Image (cartoon, rainbow, N blue to C red; front, top):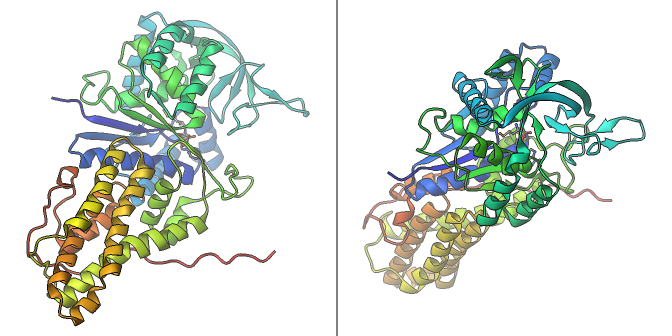
Amino acid sequence: MSKGFFISCAIDYPNAKLHMGHLYEKTIADAIARVHRLNGEKVLFTVGSDEHGEKVEKAAKAAGYSTTQYIDNMAMQFGGLFDQALISYDRFIRTNEPDHVKAAQAFFQAMFDADDIYPDLYEGWYCVSDETFWTEKDTILKDDGKRYCPNTHCGKLVERVKEESYFFKWSNFQKPLEEWYAKNPSNVFPDFRKNEMENFMKNGLHDISFSRKSIQWGIQVPFNPEHTIYVWGDALVNYLTVCGYPGKYSDFWPADIHVVGHDINRFHSLLWPAMLLSAKVPLPKQILVHGFINDENGEKMSKSKGNVVDPAIILQKFGIEPIRYYLLREVPLGNDLAFAEKNLIERNNSELADGLGNLVYRVLSMLEKYCNGVVPKVKLDAQILGQSSVSAQEAYKLYLSHDLQNALIQTWKVVNVGNKAIADSEPWKKMKEGKRDEVEVLLATEVELLRQLSILIQPVLPLASQSICDQFHFPKPQFSHLSTSHVPSAHAVKKGSVLFVKRDLPLVEEK
Ligand code: MSP
């Protein structure tokens, strides 16, 4: 039996509420997971929470809860948001679960057995916020005499650490990683992110501290309970836990895609593959590195600036589907996105409400008015179908290559063909002129376009797709039905509520 399609998201730190950036990542992965389900594949799609380490322990203390109470509550909140956002995950993995503890320990043991883990003394700097070790020359020394994290997305104060530690021989894997990069052109997507990793490798990979003696909130090193496994050495293994490691894990492994933000690309594209090579586990096929969601001026979201986009607020204002559409339509995967409500509203009003929503509404209204709510059983208009099917097929191919933005652009060409055909033929005039036959051909053809659209929009707009299927009694969407008509002939339709509501644009403040 062929291996199922496995797509994972980064597991989020439960030290704070999730923001629009976290939801962006899950939405990308969700759309891709839905594409592969529509394609008839068995899919495993995972999200989760990364619950160990100093950062989470400190956050629990600050919130006044026990660490376990705190992480239980946060995991519930994360899951709640993902459900509301229609993230169709198959598993929400928590690194505090017993099966993950077992997997992380087995994996650490495998690396030790391969002679890639050794005891030494770590002396250097540590960024709690990023859970990253830094050498002194990496850190940024500011005028206040203190050292700060060099990661542009972090920049927080680093702390001095001196303790016994087990190290991972990252340096052992320089050559095999270079080979993996050379032989697999799309192992890291997009190319400019791959180049960044190759440049980093050029400076040489250095062994990395892989356990903490002073941190208790973590998974114990299997052969020395005085140490806990470095939080990244624990978290990355989640991708294997969900596949059944250390038992049989080949139903879904190797992962097809790990979806991550560029701040954690190095952990996924250089450290994780080295760990896998050490433990003799096959490497993932692709690390898909997405851009960041910034505020509307393109600035990094941060609590101190007060510009964090809270998904709960946006969701309440607009409902989830306009947000999903906006996030995936606005920029190519890999680029940063300046989140602006104005742009979201514009897309909602023109492409969703006036475009797709209006098409569905007009076709249903005319079917009710002119055809007693029954789709006429006539030969379809080959010219209209010819125009739309080029775009429909193109959209399908683009979805399969995970180019979500262009897949939506092609899909909306089908919407436009449908709307233009109605505007051009003016069926209301034709009815007055007694040309019912022509109107019937047009409407039946429009129903066929909508049937194709119910499939093509499903990865991004699952609710709208469901609503169209319900109103027209279309079968459950699947890509294999795209080119062959599956409309039951002479079937009745039933108009439901409008798909998308138009919104007012925010008032522009006078300067
Ligand atoms: N816990 C680690 C990941 C471990 S995966 C084995 C972590 N967590 S995080 O909560 O800080 O980030 C989770 C994901 O959200 C990461 O992929 C990160 O890049 C992404 N994002 C965080 N802020 C973001 C934006 N502003 N925009 C888009 N995604 C961003 O890192």
